[in-house]
Length: 232
Figure: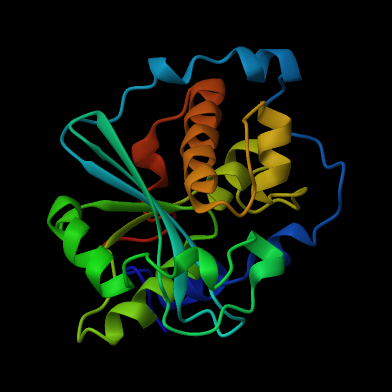
């Protein structure tokens, strides 16, 4: 079982859900130390993305517990160091039952584009050669792949950064027992504004969490592309 071109033994650990990662003991000592004031004061506008790579940040909200239909998508494309963000509600063409999670109802998406219509409008901006970035990336990748399979396509990026694993490595060590790595917990710790389960807010927060962690730790973003894996 290999995803993102990673060896099978690592792929199996990469596929662990956020619940598995977040079930570790709390109050674990951090590898890097910073106060909430220091974290809040970090100037993310000083973060420089490599200009020779395209980074595509995606967060999706799903219509049902089957997690195969998208009802909202947050997208940020950083290309040549310049960021472009896009958010859209999506009409999943099914009854939305996950309203208690994200607040989106059938009525909200009546006039929204279908996923196919939305994807057709952004796929040329995304292109083929990019680094996919998400928090608990395997979830978003899986949902996108299910949607695209209905269009005789797929979503299988060769380069991936999962900000949950970035946080684990920087804060605790990749192989260490870790504390809570949920997005809302990391945002509280780093002073990042979040309206949780709004796809636009979630993906903006994911980007800022990544930038703050890298700036605070003086680490290079390239280190976290396919952690412990190589492109296929």
